[in-house]
Every structure is written in structure tokens, then in C-alpha cells.
Image (cartoon, rainbow, N blue to C red; front, side):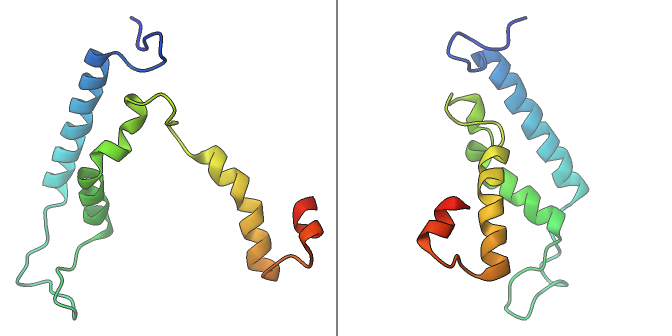
Length: 109
């Protein structure tokens, strides 16, 4: 069974199968973490108080196209770990000292 076509993307039937699995998992999670009772759990600002799990579930539902974009567009990577690793040391340096002493020092780092 070949999962990818010549462009490196999943075949249409395979991507549809994974999309249905994704939606089934989120549907089951919706049963496990139902929406908060609007009357009982109000925050001071008037918004409904939700758990972290429910917030994540709602974001995964809302941004389904973005979460699964790697299946349809070749240049989108499955993970962004490489990008995060590239910027991590620079961010650590900024947090520790606040800045570089010179432009040359920043380039060397």
C-alpha cells in the first residue's frame, strides 16, 4: 500500500481516511469533555469558564484546516521542531541578558 503519491502527499483516499479518524477522535473527546454549564460556571468577565482540555478541543475543531494542512500541501512540515530548535538558543540569550552587546557579538552567536 503506497501512502504517498509522486508529489510526496498522501493519496486522496488515505487523507480522507485520516481526516475521518481525526474527526472521530475529536467527537469522542467532545463526549468525554462536554461544554461547561453556562449558568453555574461564569467567570467575572461574563465568559463561560472552561477546562484546558475543553479549550484545546475547541481549538482543534476550529483550526482543523491548519492542523491537517501537512496532508494536503507538500511544503508544510508535519512538525515545527526544527524551526523551534533554531530559535531557542537566541531566545534563551535574550531572556538571560536582554540583548547582545554588539551587532558582531549577535552575528557570532
